[in-house]
Length: 209
Image (cartoon, rainbow, N blue to C red; front, side):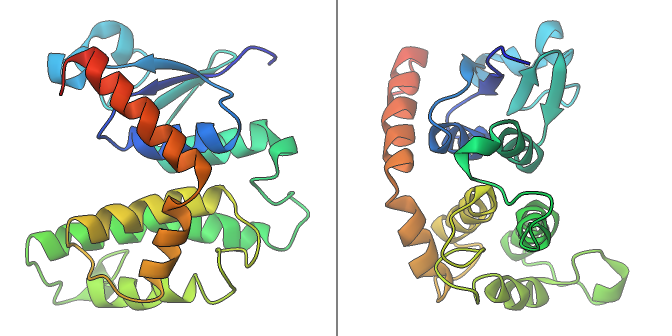
């Protein structure tokens, strides 16, 4: 599949995670902006890509991939030479997938509980337990070093870091260590600065200023 992947993106959405991933890989995707304020995500041509009618989505060689974490994992493997995913034979592959998918599977639902001031009285009945368990567990992801894989930045940090950044930005998770230092470290990356600059330009083009 030599053609460039097409990444469907919109500023101020979960597309920010995959857009960051694209920049970390060296801008490997063709970017297709979906104006969600005009309902473009609900049009038939886009629903054919993602029936959920939300961004982001990726199409590569006729293959459609949705969900931000899945797109990041796909891109990391599709461009393995960029070094953002451990090889299948690498023992670190387990931790890489574990924390990449812990973010949407556990951290995001816990965020909603905190936003809604909802307490799960029977955590064992729910896949992610409760917010206290999720936060305590998330801290162990950063025990190896500066990044999830220790000294090695990876696509797992893009997903996990994006989720933590959003959660702390809006108060769903209290600013605390080791999360604060970790997110600050990630937000200082050149790829993030490029994303911010490009998203500002996209918003200007969309008339969102």
